[in-house]
Image (cartoon, rainbow, N blue to C red; front, top):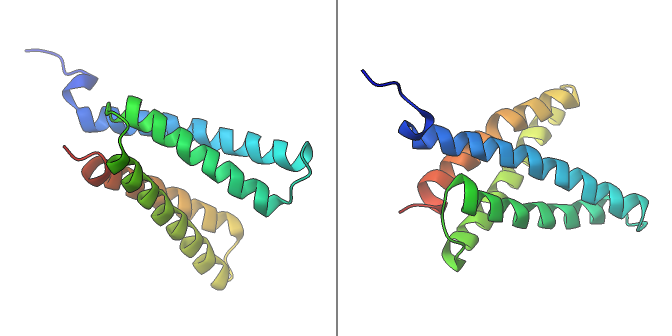
Length: 131
């Protein structure tokens, strides 16, 4: 009887790499936004917009090359951006719904964390990087 390894479960391996990338890219977003606000004097909305672009492009490169072991290409880039924008829309809708229901903001954040990463991972796994 052989022992199962992570390579026997490619979807799990991709999901773990996707999670590590997501944590790193989130930290990058925070650093870029903070630097643009504190050092460059940008307004928070503009700084976060710029940080979102930097984080999305970085996420694309790491997820393409490492999480999904693919080659960057216009087709998977356009699908990646579409999924990222959908994730942004879901995040805004979930947090907006929590706010409209009078829930504490942290429940909205929890809802975003529980819905956006799994949804975007599945879309990337089965659409963005489809074989």
